[in-house]
Image 1 (cartoon, rainbow, N blue to C red):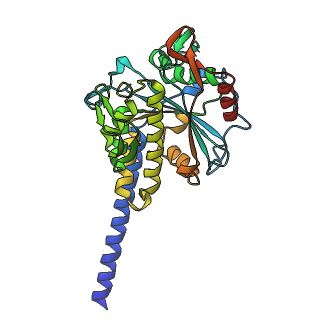
Image 2: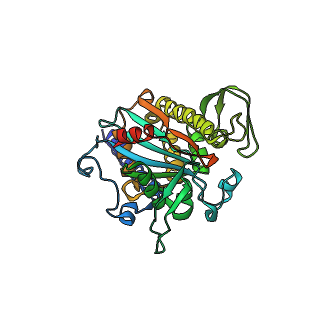
Image 3: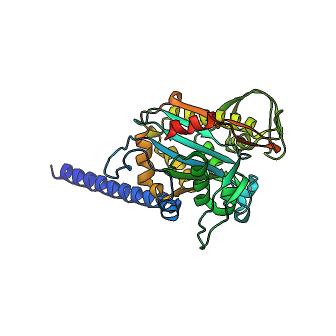
Length: 333
């Protein structure tokens, strides 16, 4: 009995040690992933000069919020470094945001609409506060993506709200390298293209057909424009919508809860490459948002492009087509 007792005690101590080490590792991982995230206090910067939230403000006490939510999502090359530059990104002095989407989550979080805003859309860019003090000047007939270039995330949000009169509840920006690492961590995505792609600028060459893309190829697809027959931003957006649907399908089928190592790689890729508003700048807040979407399936996500028409004074630019655009924004309020 004495030998068995010692074995039980040793096993118990070993289990306790393993649990302590596991808890320490989990704590380190949580701090590491939360520390990866860069955030901007957009609410403080913009104050009350914004569209109203529909109904009551989201409650921090609710374990899983289920109200409607609008998130401005930008894809950018705003962060410098060798990895971004190798993928075709600019440095931090030449920030661009050529991909802009408003993700609207329906009440109940079982349906969503992803609305793309073409980068070539001409808008009235409002005066935006600058982090160093002062403000940018209002500019008429400015390209939508110029807001990020002149005033960063705060101006991107304010310009989106001025265009749509829709309150952006959150902001999320992901850079080139982070997007590529996310796709690689997921094991790639499968996309079908309707035409051959040969684009030196996005560094992508694909024949028409179905392809399983790695991260670098998926990034090239998201950036492809000049290799398409139409050569337009609207054609590029159609490819981006295919990519969004492919990512959702991949995430849905990846079995992440049964593969902690892959889940950590994905979390590290995402948190290390995003900028958020201060309402999403911790792992707990991001996980809470993700958990609130557990009833959302890929089939419940609709992708659309803001209705546009050629600008009468510039055939290379577009303007919002009314009243169709206003009807779309009204549905998101």
